[in-house]
Length: 227
Image (cartoon, rainbow, N blue to C red; front, side, top):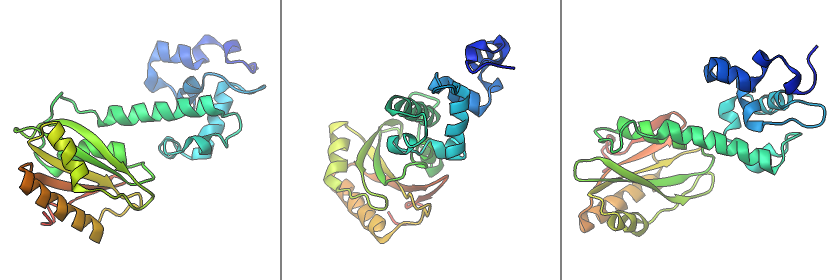
């Protein structure tokens, strides 16, 4: 019978040694979480705590959307472990969203979605990004402009174009999310797009598109003829 401490287990069953010997794909989700948590509580091992954490979230995807306060409601999760979990999930999101090349060329809304959906699909509040392109439509950087409430994110053209001018962008694309899961543009979305497009014509930095991300789906306002 195995003891309460993972150190007492056969080396081939310990998550750390298993990962080193067989690679990360050999580990279960619980074992991977246990490596992030590192220690258990009381008579429980890190694996026991990982099982409880995972069952509270139903899946890694859902668990990755939890706030520090929500995680700390789980028995055995204090501020330090909550922060470690959130950092691990955020690293995963950013790695998935990172382009394969240093300056990827944007050819279509699908190219934008490839980088932005992983960052936005699990956000529980509306956030608004501006993507800064060079003269060859290469994505040079992306900047979060605002973070709003559950269903509202207010943005003004001056905030968007200040960033674009400061970073010498040749053109821009803006992206925001709908936590509701509905990617259809609202009346406010259409109006903001109109204002941004007009401001872009005035300053000479055109707005190529406005994408709305909702879960794994997205809508391009340019494709809808709203630009």
